[in-house]
Every structure is written in structure tokens, then in C-alpha cells.
Image (tube, rainbow, N blue to C red):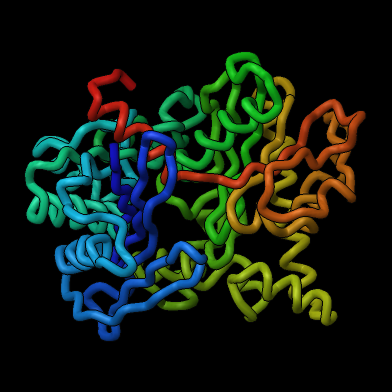
Length: 401
């Protein structure tokens, strides 16, 4: 079975084509700048080189059509016919409290995703455009949606509710949803396989630390809390997102900066976080470089960044009554050893003891903690696309999720 996985953003499409017989990747790449000038597709070739092709892409339909065209290209493609694609799996960021597991796309599912656009206007609108583009180009091919917040649907109400009038939750669905669920799901299961332990009898703190970042508390295979909230803005300090902030500080700054609600939301998402503190970049690699050169604001940002992760690790250990495994993943979590070490430093009272030599690694599955550490600290590279492909295969084959 061959499955195409699509992750459609507001102006982009990332794709991977899998042969599910052995879960090998047959093709991958991404379309950028849909609806803008100088749109293009970047294709990753077998030798890890990348080929970029410019194109006129006014909508997602043309973007998806270009993906299909590249997949069929006799020189750089992987298919002889689109009939070889058995199903298409989509990442959808916001399933709200309507979708608590992956499902086959139907008109009702499309309507549900549309109804949730208010909760994730940029993301869900893009996902829906991608689904409709496949509808138009390959109407007979089954599609599956895998919701980014579905893994967090096991949170108890006392963890996901905000302390606002309850009727506002019922009317407007205002609650903590959490995101990066597909990644947290993958690494929490994979780390247990890697260590040879039973996920159903294990307390895990999963740290998905990238430009966007979140932490999840996973007790016996089920999420009991997570750091992101109604939107991906809450929780940790991130590349350009503020993370947790006093709501009164937001309204105060709205007055001082003369910003309307959407302008303020954009500012908190795009101009704060590491970028806002340093004025340098939202890229942690550039911040670490500036720190090595003696930039004091870069040093401050790194301290703030790791301190907030440390606080969430401590609070989630308390929420679960302990922790057995801490797993690091995503771009920063997989590649920046200093951040991992600093975030765990001082948590010896929880049974966490890092090993500097083991921690000196990037992007590989590896135990990072000392041999005598009571808590295993492990690096597991994430693979959200294979989770989507597996769910798609299972649902198309009629298996229950």
C-alpha cells in the first residue's frame, strides 16, 4: 500500500510518500509560497540533494497538482501513475472537542474542520484547502485526517478547563487543547520500545522543543496535561511566541502599543519569545552562536528558555506523582545539547542525573542520563508523518483506532 501524507499550511504543502509494506519513504518535499509571487516546490532526491522548481501556484489545488506532477516525473518522481496512491493522510492542527481520534474524510468531517477554523484560522483553513484539492484531483481516493490535538483528548476536565464561567466553555469551546500531539504520541511510544518498558505502566514527560515548543505529561500511555492551550501560543517560551504571560500584561500592552486584538495576537506569536528578548533571531542556533560571542541578551534568552522547560518538567512530575522517562525531540530538542543539559540541571531531587558525554549528540536515539540516574533521559527523533501514514493505513483497512 502506498500512502501520501500531506501537511498543508496557509501557503505551503509538505509531503511524504510511503510504501507501507516496509514503511520506506519513496518521495518527499514541500511546496512554498502558494498564492504569492515566486512560488516553488523543493524536492528531496535519493542522494539527499534538493531540486527546486518554480511555478505559478494561485491556490492549494495547483499546489497539490504540482506535487502529483513531480511524483510522476520520469526523472525525479516515484510513481508511474497516480492510481498507485491508495490513500492520502492529512495533518489537521485543530480538532477541538469534536474529533478525538483520526477519521476518514467525509463531507461531515470537512464541515467539522471548517466549523473549527475560528480556533485555528491559519492552520485549519489551509488543511481544509488541501483536503478539497485532493477531492477535486483524486475524488475516488480515500483521505484520512489525523488531528494534532487528539492525543491530548485524554486530559481530565480539571486539567483542560480555564477558570472562566463554565457556560463560556460550553458555548465557545474555550479550553486547553494542546498541540504537537502526533509528535508526543510517536516519541512516547517509541521511547518505551527503545527502552523495553511498558508504556501502560510508565510516567513520561515528553519535550517537543522546536521553534514551536510544548511539554506533555503522559501517564500510562495517556496525556494528563500539556503546556499549550486553546492555541499554540501558551506554555513555553518559543522562537517567536511569548508563551505564558499575564493576561493583564496583554491588555496593558494593547493600550500602550495601540494594537487591536488580532494585531496583538500576531505580535505575541511572531515578535516575542527568543526573538523578542534578543532582537537577533527566532532560531536557537543563532542565539547560541551569539551567546558564545558574549551577547548578554542571548545568554538571558537561553536562561529563560531552559528555566521555563525545567519548571514544566517539575510541575508535571508533581502532577503524575513522579516521572520515569524524560524524552527530548524536535529541532531544538534533538540538536542542542546545552539546552537539554541546562533544562535538567538541578533536578537531581527528582532522580534526574545527566551524563555530559552521552548528551553530546544530535538527532539520534540515545540515552542521555547517567547510568545511575533513576529517571531515564532519552533523545528520540520525532516522525509525525509515519504516525499519520499508519493511522491512514489502519482506517482504510477498516481497523478501529
